[in-house]
Amino acid sequence: AVAITDHGVLYGVVDFYRAATAAGVKPIVGIEAYVTPGSRFDRPPRRDDIRYHMNLLAVSDVGYRNLMTLASRAYLEGFYYKPRIDKETLAAHSEGLICLSGCITGEINQFIQNEDLDGARKSVGEFRDIFGPENFFLEMHDHGLEQQALCNKHLLEFGKEFDLQMVAANDVHFLNKND
Image (cartoon, rainbow, N blue to C red; front, side, top):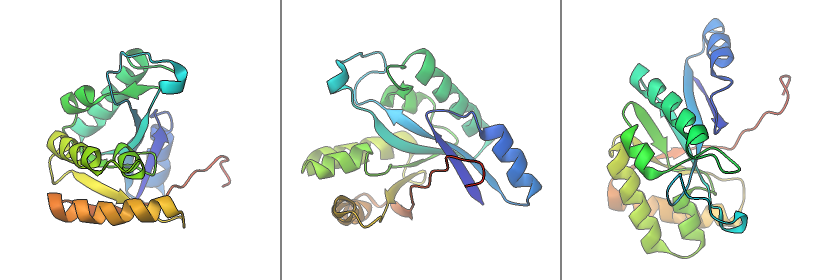
């Protein structure tokens, strides 16, 4: 299997799906969403504009429709430099989705890096409640960065504390077709 999680969009999904199925590979459709900590309608000064990364993967037709809805609402209602969604929108459209907590720029990891473990715990609990414990995974990365080692240590602790599964992930970006 292979997944596509373009940043904020689903533009490549149809070509990706066709190519994967033609090659006999199971396609997993997703999006790397930009999640704003406030409302998607907020328009803070540029220097205060925060967007956390979070991967969402469709596990059913309902999930795929929810991905399309989330991407559309991110552009139509939340666009501010980037297409953004909020937790209210996630909660309304979480059915059929698996959520990965995000890379180093995810909300939980940002709280950890800012030494706000209570904020990180609160965030873990909110996402677990939105997606359900069976559909929310704590995402670990290891690119040799000190910040990731710190985050991974705490993510493992949160996994035990909240009885959540872990997933090993890697940031993989392709600029050109031949890459």
